[in-house]
Amino acid sequence: MASTYDLYRNLAARPLGRRIFSAAYRLKVPYFRSVRPRVVEMSPHRAVVQLRKRRALHNHLGTLHAIAIANGLEAAMGLLAEATVGPRRRWIPKGITLDYLAKVPGDVRCLAETDPRDWDHETPFEVEVRVGAQLRDGTVVVRGTIPIWVTDRT
Image (cartoon, rainbow, N blue to C red; front, top):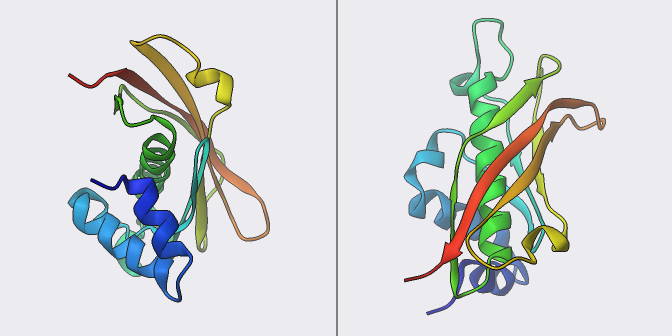
């Protein structure tokens, strides 16, 4: 069976491939359908998704809701984990810690990153995935961590 990362690499190389992969990702993980993350990048140790500002994600101030952004960050973290963890391991998030630094008046990019040495352990182990959300101009509006627990598949 092809991995999620293999599927991404195959589709990303084709016209409209990232859009098709993004739609498939939302089907596989229905929870993310509400925020409609568009996959921009998926690779070991780094993933990026884009959230488009739309009314369904607004808070009472007319800006992107903090929890919608948290969902986008979790979507990016999941892509990073799938691309990094390897075929004999599995992962599960243990929590989330976020600092909301500014209102989000427009589209936002949600990034997840780790370093290779974070994954160089015998199982089980924990990885602190660094996450952040940025506006188009590079302004960081959310930053934090999502710890994930990595174990061997049984």
